[in-house]
Image (cartoon, rainbow, N blue to C red; front, side):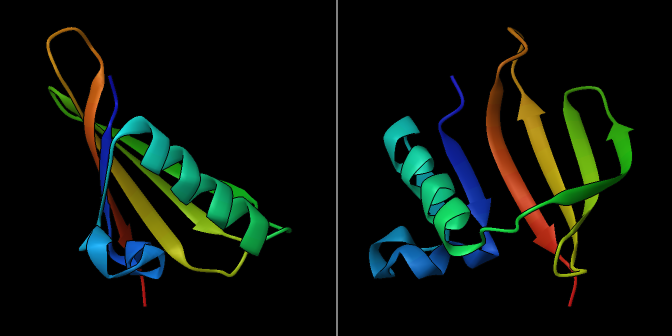
Length: 88
């Protein structure tokens, strides 16, 4: 299943993260931290871009930051990695 994400903002989780979230429980913790720290969190979908085994979702956050989440899928169509790119 989906167990790895590489995001520039993961450093908030501590030095041991090294910019990556690995494992479902750690990923749940990362998302819970985000939801707690940003109570007005919302997204505006800009576009969805498709490739052979990847999908990029481009959206704007409540802060105005433009984000691209790129998900890579295996042959069973399960996301294996996610990389997030942030503007500014």
